[in-house]
Image (cartoon, rainbow, N blue to C red):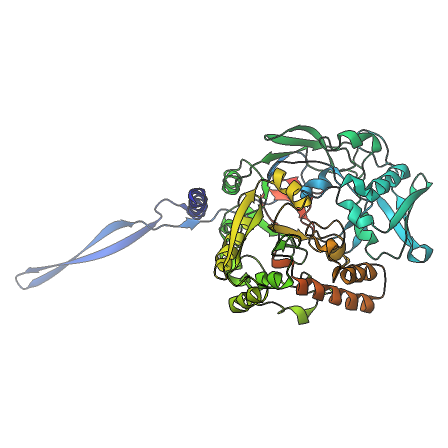
Length: 554
């Protein structure tokens, strides 16, 4: 609280100094003449004497200096200093953990998702769907080099696909290659990726297939080696990571920056104060409480990733009592006051979500928008029907030790107490949180989930909450409703008929809400801030950082 007050004072002082510097005072320039008349009566003769008195009057003249012309063309050189919050845990691009947004700085995929929400060529110049929709052929660029100096060829893509399919490694990318049967080299710059069934989400997977050389696999966790615009110079855990311009980058003349330094600053207020003081140029993760004030700060730009993909949620482990009861899970849904959580925990800066699809998606189901409302009386009744008239005790594992995951759980905890549910909050450091999550060592979690994909299958094929495989919340052990849920998700992901897919996803969404193990709360939009001297700082729809075109005004 004290650091937030300090940050507010800093912003106010900066605004005041900016206003004071808007103009300068000139020397006195105006002279006003005052005429006084003296009348003297001398017997019967009247003499008039006129005296002129000069009086200096000071008037302020505000002179507004002409603004300096801003450069319109990118300038080369310079160092971008930024903070992502916590430190890196791994650089392996197949894992989606903290700081995954930094992947495109080191690694690239055959294609990427454009700002328009479609796919565009990247390491592959072009691609086509062949074999009746069962394979994609990628035509790779020639002359693309890895940071170790070797040219990237079809062999590297084939090996990367094989690694992506390997579920034993425990990485996240295997979810995107469930239906892939392998890849084959047609020539040095042509690769064919085969699938067992038609896979509408295949390109979403290929867009996340970050290529790196096989010989770097043993050290990739600590030493990233890709084709990206920057290559690692050094990483001192807990202090800084330095990346330098890759001189052999395939995009001629890019990147513009010489160096990127990332400093771990876990404390949110310290991160903001460093930005205001100019100690860092950019940061990821602006606290929502400070977003409105930061938007008014001079010399700072604030940008937000789009809503509709990743979301904050409370998720229950249905293998833990009493969450093995559907009525208990439904009661927990009715006890969530999204409006209060958004106003209190997210400071009015978030958007509520119940159906976890963007409203612009063709898979969105508007008829399910009010499936659950905030209704404590209904929640109590459901607990009674489930055999818990006096409530119960449980715990909520928090992703991290501060921030929105803890804040929203504290609001939820208060309302749960009103229906007799005593929820202990367990803030957990990220290095301990993820192993516990993966091993299902929790009752409930305050978590972030979702998947930014072009195809709507991402929710059921990639999001940890909802996928019917590698699910941490116990749903795959259910023999009642889960088989149908899995069938729907898989069938919708293996047909090209949009109307048929829409029906299948609607039924799957209905089961998701009826069973209620996942409680969507609000869209999780990543907020970035950077100083005005930083230009072309690109954030994609997944919140990932692209520094190919970024430059600093000298």
